[in-house]
Each structure stands twice: as C-alpha cells, then as structure tokens.
Amino acid sequence: MSTGPAGHVARSTVRPHSETTRGTPARTRTRAFLRTSDGVAIDAVYDPGAVVYDTSRSPADHPVFVVAHGFTGAVDRPHVRRVARTFARYGAVVTFSFRGHGASGGRSTVGDREVLDLAAAVGWARELGHARVGTVGFSMGGSVVLRHAALHPRQTDAVVSVSAPARWYYRGTAPMRRLHWLVTRPEGRVVSRYGLRTRIHHRDWDPVPLSPVEAVPRIAPTPLLIVHGDADGYFPVDHPRMLAAAAADQGELWLEPGMGHAENAASDELLGRIGEWVVGRAG
Figure (tube, helix red, strand yellow):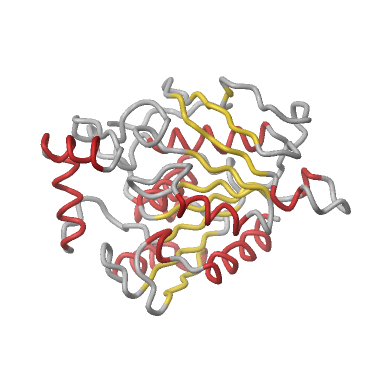
C-alpha cells in the first residue's frame, strides 16, 4: 500500500452537467467521476455554494473547500452532506468518496493511497477555476489532508485536520482496537464490506507511509489548523498535542471542550468557525 507519485491533473470521466467552461467555476451542482493517478475512479460532487449568490466577486475569487471524510464515510452520507452545506455558506465545496467507499472504485488502504484521491479532488477544484483551495479532513481524512499537504505543498492554500491520529497503529482505545480487527482480519473485512459498505485492501502497508506527525513539519508555510475534541473516544488529546508540537508556531490548535470524534461530533457552530478560518487564510 505504498503512496506513489500523484498525478498532476485530475481528469473527470463524466463531464460536468452545468453552464460552465473549462477554468470557470460551475453555477450549479455537479457530479463526476475523477480518475486518480493510479487509475481509481473517485465519485465526487461540486457545490458552488456562495458562488451562486455573491455577484459582487468573480466565482474564481471564492475559496473552495475540499472535504475528506472519515473511514466508512461517503459523499452521500448525511454527516458529510451536513458538513458540505455548512461550508457552502463560505465558498464552493467539493466532496468525494475515498477509494473503497460509496460508489468510488478500488479498496481502502486506510489513509495510504487515499492521498491520491484527495489530489484528484483538489485538481478537479482547480480545473473548475478556483484559485484558492482549503482542504478539510476528518479522522482518517484528517490524516490524509496532512500527508497530502506535506507531499504536494503547492496544491492547497490552507489545511484543516479534525480528529486525526498523530501516529500509526494506535490501539489504545476500544474503538481503535475494533477498527484494527476490521482492517487486519479477513472476517473483519467481510463485516466492513457488507455491514459498513467499505471495501478494505487485504495487503499490509509496504512501505509504511509517512505518518501524520512526520508530515506536519513539511506543511509550512501553508496555514494549518488542528481541531480535536477533548472527549474523543478514538484518539485522546496526546494526538493533537503531538501534531501541534510538530507544527510549532506554524500551526494552530483548537482543543474543543466536550467534543467527540469527527464529522458526527462537529457542531454547526464549530464548522462555521472552521469555514471562517479557511476564508481568512485561503480566501
């Protein structure tokens, strides 16, 4: 499950059904399948959001939020759509299903080659004409946005990681021990496929990919925000603190009182603050 070089441009296998030309942001909701550099089809949705209503600025002046969901999520899941609706108040939004999730092809590598999926989504956002891109990831997606920004530093203008692990192979909580069973055991992968609608690759990582905490120092000078709940049942607060320490004065840490894990635990108020932060840094 090693991460190879990402493609420079994501190509859509389904042309957008909207009144737009190449390099001009669409004014209507668009759905497309993107092709990653390693040949996986990724289901993606573009929502013009605030672009539709703000006639005082060019659509290209608005930032676009590229949202990377957590493990077992997908572009049509209600919690992902809620995140997209909130961010749409601040700019355009691209959501997508990681490989092995939803209608996307391939199998999940649980944060390794998913960097290529995010690269395809970011490339599509730029192809649609947006000059400013902010990536926002949750849990597994949070680790992916960190690694993407480190490996492809010129692709994004602001990075937000929510509820992400700092290090690989963490088994210190019961939810993470269950997740490792799903990923590493044949019977667990069957449960994941039919019970959680997530298809997991059977091969171990080889080589082990760059960890989130190793990625963080490489992100500067791109603005970085780390968000974590102090009631997270998957990753305790030593994870965000480790990430923040690695970022030093190049990142911000929001430790949210009473917040649990990832998209379901992120309130609309918190999502609004994240939206404002991205606009302020990337917009």
